[in-house]
Image 1 (cartoon, rainbow, N blue to C red):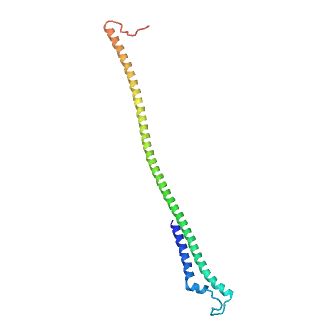
Image 2: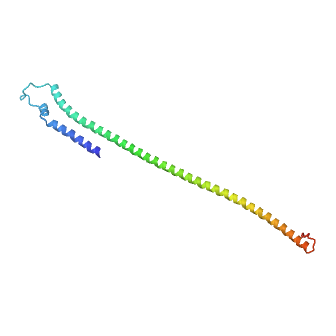
Image 3: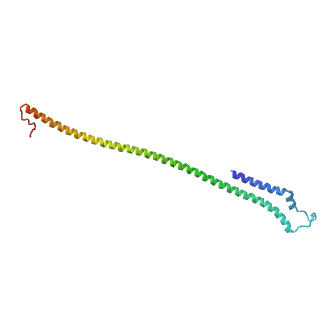
Length: 175
């Protein structure tokens, strides 16, 4: 939008410059043609007349050329500015993405540490379960040995009771 406003402004300035030159006394004096009878000086050659008219046309041409060059230059500058703005926007977006990725990495590291802690706890619990199984097995072995001891003591007591009552003291039953 700004480019369009500048372009229109430049064209208007060039047109006003052209109109001002065309309306000026100097321009009219240089381009005015009087009949040869009214001329105070001798008639100029065609080459000289073309030179004066060409000079005025040159001024108009230069004004229009300057306006066109300025217009093209403003257009180029605006295009470059848009590209710079796009690059800056792209850089900002990349910075935001990098920041987001860094945050994700930090979160993943925290999660990894958390998961490692959970894994360590599970390993500790598994070791505790293994220790409890060993303790349970030891208790079973102890219970079995105690049961065997109890059975042996019961047999001994039964033999002693049999001896006391006048028996042989043999408590084994042979089939």
